[in-house]
Image 1 (spheres, rainbow, N blue to C red):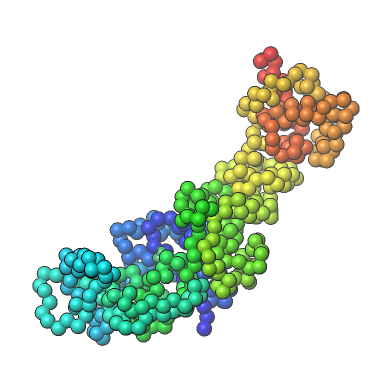
Image 2 (cartoon, rainbow, N blue to C red; image 1 turned 180 degrees about the horizontal axis):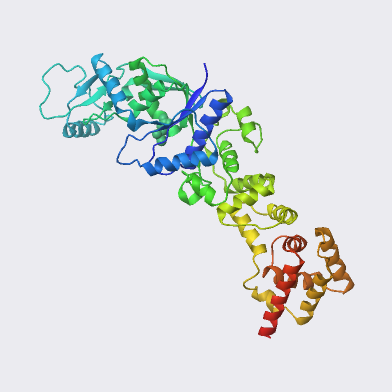
Length: 462
Ligand code: GLU
């Protein structure tokens, strides 16, 4: 039987990275087995769901390139179907109307708590034969087992067994007729042919209820894998403060989708001590048996490291095209582009930082670092002019490097007294990529002009 998995987000907001990780595991499992990965939007809560959120989820799927099979299933379009199954269970005596009012339920709950009993519905309408009260709109409850337990073998947590005493006859349709969460999830998973459900372990307690629905309707029960959450470095639930949680915000910050997916696959799954996984490798190596039992920890520097790895691997022309998304055009011919990008790849972890690095080189300085400027002398400027004038127009990076070393030596200069003013003239500040690469990328003429600007401003400030 082929593997069919699904991702079933509730569109209450953006897609967060925990959700993306769940989607990724489901995607990998299905695709690695030649099966199907389905997307279902759980939008039955008409008050809390929005079209915008659904679109944001779909956009995040596009960006990460996780493609789902078949058309997206929307629960909001399946109310008739759910009503049919509710009616079937009523007809078969597996579900019943319960006329207990909210006040009665509250009173029962208070009494149970006062008697130190766990609050639960007392089955009073389970076998009710009398005349129902007139003005109460009933809910529909499913008959849960009265004895024994509900058991399932979780692919991550092992055998999970919940005593029947802990599961009451839960509501499957509210008094307005709308079906409840655990009911529709079970129906949809069964009708969509889902064989394996990988989801967050916050759903572990829902599973026994869903199993009761499967059994009542005679549906095949899928295999469940409940995965532990992603925690922050302090061991607490991941929050907005720990980094972005919206998947699309990672794009804004300059992360590559392949880096984010690689990062996420390692949060809760491992293969030996390997850290870097291309999508092909993930598909080859992923197996739900290796899902971790303990919670994983969000580690920003690891994400940065992975992102840098994928930036380094990227062809420079692709990178050039991607920077346009960040508003940066790089009008350089290919040899200059190669030199500049290879140098910037060494030190920049995100596309955003990379764009800033490109702009720092390409845009002539608008201001100068004050401390460095204070050390400028006319003599130092003369050296810069001499040096730049001595370079051939088509000098290579290593020729620029060699000429600069030779210039320092021949003129008996301290390296810093020459290189710092050069950096100031060309970039306006210290730091950054190598000077030879910078000069090569900008071209001799542009560098001459920047040196001359420094001289003008130096003279104005004398
Ligand atoms: N809609 C649920 C959620 O967003 C997921 C349901 C499931 O995976 O079974 O948490």
